[in-house]
Amino acid sequence: MMKRIGFILLLVITVQSCSSFKSIFHSRFLKDQEQLILASPDTAPMRVFKITNSKDSLLLRTKSKNIKASPNDPTLQHFIKRLYATVTDSMSLGVGIAAPQVGILKNIIWVQRFDKENFPFEVYLNPKIKIYSIKKQVCREGCLSIPNRSDTLKTRAFSIKISYDTLEGKHLTETVEGFTSVIFQHEIDHLNGILYLDHLSEEVEDAT
Image (tube, rainbow, N blue to C red; front, side):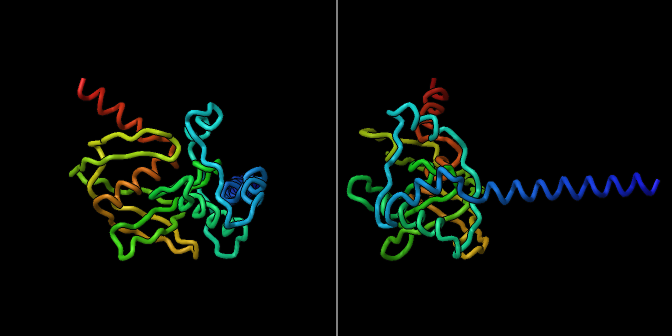
């Protein structure tokens, strides 16, 4: 009996260890991701993936994984700066960008905060939307990954409650309203392999 209990305990510890290792593994950049990130200086914009390219389109439809928040991770620091350089570059200027849009399937986004003084860009790790308001808003949306197109959506929530990690490892929650909430919804969709066109298609189906 004691041997059986000992075996079960060993099995539980082994499974938990494997699960923890798997979690740690997925929280870090893969080798090919690291090579892509470090291929250029942190001031250099990255190539924006577009749905007009078949390989790009497949990646944009893939769900991203969490990243371990650490101010001491040089690759993470390098990537965050390159992602910022991309969204503020004149060739790919936008109000937000998600990591998969430059080929890195990690839950990282930059959002321009139009609800704050001077409209700063801020980075968010592992963001999730916890609550969507019933109240909706009509908004015009475009996307860096969908060239030469913009559309009007009617299904975006006016207010959302989000949770996220800071680079320093703090886990925070916040309520965001108005146009800034649309940017968050748009970028977090990217992390889940969703494009704004999917919401447009739903609207058309509902109208039909």
